[in-house]
Amino acid sequence: MSSYRSLWDEGFNEIHIVSNAIVFGILDEKDEIEQQLTIRRDGYARIQRFTFGNGCKPYSVIEDKKISLPIETMKKIFDYIGYYLQAEHEYMFVTDVGYWEINLISQNKSSIPFTGPLFFNDIRYYEGHNICDIIRDLLDVSDLYLFDGNPDRLDELTINYERETRTYFRDEGWDFSKGEPFQSNHHKEQFQLFRNTNQLIYTIWHSDGCKTQQILEMNPLVLDILNSLGATAFIDKREPTILVDEPANENMKITYWIETHSKKGVTYVCEDSFDRYHLPIDWWKFIDTYLEDLESYILLGEMFQEKYYEREVRLASDRRFALIKFSEHGQTYAYLCNDENINTGDWVLVPVGAYGHTNRGLVTAIEYHQVEKAPYPMDKIKSVIKRLDLEDKNDFDY
Image (cartoon, rainbow, N blue to C red; front, side, top):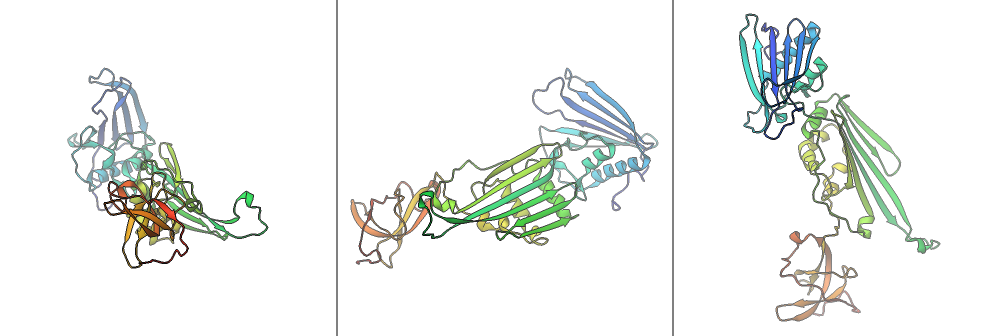
């Protein structure tokens, strides 16, 4: 903090902070709505707490606590408060938030006031640590409002990734009543962040049985990611979607499991299919913001590759489309295809034109899309009539 003016060296004798959390809405008489903190150079500190009571000042006092701190600790508190007041921040206009007022009182009792919003988005950091949290730790009072209202924070993050791939093989002695024989390969990854040790641990269990682990310690990137994601990271998900139970989805099954722990002891766990439809919304913020930084320190695995987190899977709400050609060098046309037995390479009978005519065509691809992403407008698209059994499936007769 050498580039900032020291409140201690400036000779201020006392600092008084009022943190008022009253917002619009109905408050209960027992709600704690104000805290007052007074600290002095001689090590004296006083913490007062007030409830809403009948809604009129003076509010009801529920605690009036006096403590004594070492002079060196008090000096740090003075200077962290000074750092907070001088640190750059975005000035904002906000409503329905509380406020804080601070008075810096000099030896001759003159006072310098400051004020600001009691707002969790106005957090300021010193070397990756919330300055208000540093002051709370020095005072050993974890629930002080101070300047930010004491919001929760993300302290630990664990992201587990698992891919199971099935490879089917022929075995003449196999009992096919048990299904087709296959070999299953597992690949696992775990990405962890820990605030208390300032560590990033990235572990990969490879399908051949090998294990690799990378550890990044005491790097500002760890705290930067935790601070940016926040205590509610990875909670919000997209609209629920259901995967179709089909071989294409079963041959490669990729899942994730995310667990977060906050400063206030809140644990959140979510798990689902690892694909573009089922990952939490914050995943893309995390990737867009920190992928390049992570790549500069550690070797990243599958979970950070776009082909996996953006992969397409078949959803229960998908519609099935057949792309059809009518001549060898002609263009393809999209048709709805509800018959699951029709696949690429099949000949089909389809309607053509506006007068009820039909023609045969070759299915060149089968695609699955949500209605809003259909390859042709749904109110104009036609449907495949039926599959044709032709002797030569590779011959166009025109």
